Image (cartoon, rainbow, N blue to C red; front, side, top):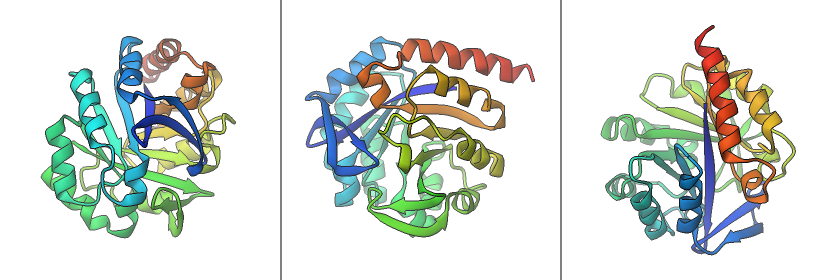
Length: 250
């Protein structure tokens, strides 16, 4: 199970939001590139970027920062979500060195777009399902839908999606604990690896997810807990590795 540090980009800075609200942000660093280097130095095996401005604008707003993070990451994969609404944007990110493209809004509004991305960029597409009470939200979480996370995940079962990032919006940035039950239930419903997101606050959350890893949970995205110091990246990865070893022995 990968522990994936999150770097949320707003106005060129590294921020964290509470429950996805753009007006409730905390700036943690003026240089997202320096932040990425910090996590790489601490042993990160993947970097998670979100272009918050792009998610609302519908097109990239922090592309140069993304390119620079990819540059320093080398062979460590970078995944990016927020504002990917065209093949041209996807190609630009792949050319910049991004390994995984995370599609959220268009996964709900135009699922055929995801199908096309998987054909054009095999093994490079992740679907982001951001849910409130089980229903997916779009447009940077500003709009609610009537689509359930489970039904949408099942829609992409056989199209070549590499993983699904499942975010519990109610817990994101709130340091209230991860929703292991809902994450594991989604993993049970599909054969696509699930990456947990939202609410991871300490080693107990990593333990909770690790115990359910055999059900298909492949990673956990961590943000505020790393920035505020309630979770150490290296310690979390050691614990995740121990559960991965146990899961392989089952």
